[in-house]
Image (spheres, rainbow over the protein chains, first blue to last red):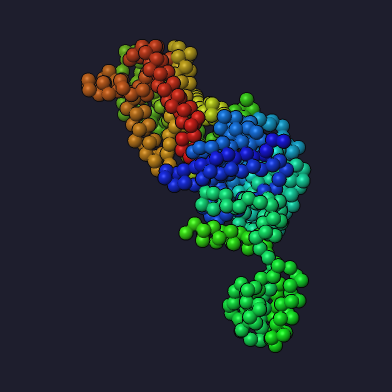
Length: 304
Length: 251
């Protein structure tokens, strides 16, 4: 099957600054994929090149098998992009905006589908409102609607929930999830790691223009981290046999590494044998955030 | 075709929705020029034998309004879209660069012609204006506004800030149009200024357009047509190339 997105040896320079270095990436059809990374890692640059908003310095990019430079029209028809910035055309109403957007993609009578998107995004009572008069959250919804007017098989969302309230965020994700279930490939960048963890099946982490990690969420979480146990004890001295499990000690809290829940009993036994009392205990589950921080720090240490 | 038609419709709607500013204001400004120069000069100046100064002035003013508004339309649309960021919707779409080019140019032509027609219709109430060769007048109106529409598009793409755009408009477009023989014949100027005027493409646009009304002109309408067409093609080729490479638009 043709990959939704295929990137080979992609490089992008702005003058002497290297924004992307030798990116290779395959995203299959039907995936829910997250692009993560700190600000300036190259996420938006990568998305811009896929969307044709920016030209690559070298390398190859295709969307559903269409080269984004030589077959740019076919590639762009396959793609819906929700930009990061809240951009809008102040001359038009919501419905006009969506009709115009449909027309750009060669679709003339699109009102049935426009009505459906408007309904799902809870914009029905704003359809005749001028874009200028909408709140930030509403404008964000219109941006999502605009990306969907031509029913693109691949949808890219560049930090769609930045600055969006909780209710809208959840409504948005319900809608995007439904699109994914219906077969659309979804690619998103986000700063909310729990969002990526909840929604996506695979993640690429970018750092300084390179992909430092590319794996499924499950693998990342199970490979990279373990559960840990946070304890406040009656004494600050930890028994010697637990020293090798110690991750950190600060503010009176010991953080111990455990590989499974079975080890908890062993740890407690050792503490009791040493005559220590447990005053507080908390099991800390690893999550994507921890993986993310680990990878970013690890890579930093490695590069020095 | 639908993509092109949609972008054209959008561009037309854009200025029709603010027609007070984009159509009515330039018509009023042009009529003010007419009023002032009519009162000051009509008794003193004879440009061609048997032709009243107003009959000479009005076609020139109409053409000046046409080219200035054609330029203003594409340039302001582009710079506004760039500043507000909504140009991204056009750039993300599968519209080809030719479609983008022609949609912007055609919208500029329409705006220029609407303003020009407005001025003409109003002046017809008060003055008698001959119309010897309407086909020449229309031809120059269309090519002239296309040329300025393309120039506006090019300027809108190149300008990074609104004030750069305003500088281009105030220091290049405005002087070139005002000094193109709208208010006087170039032949009446000292030799050196005649020479400069002949390097000004706007002179040929105005002179050719005026020929359509008066049946007389300073240079042959064929010469004017040649010069204007070459200028338009040159600007159009550069603009299309700029759109194709994505210069300043797709960094």
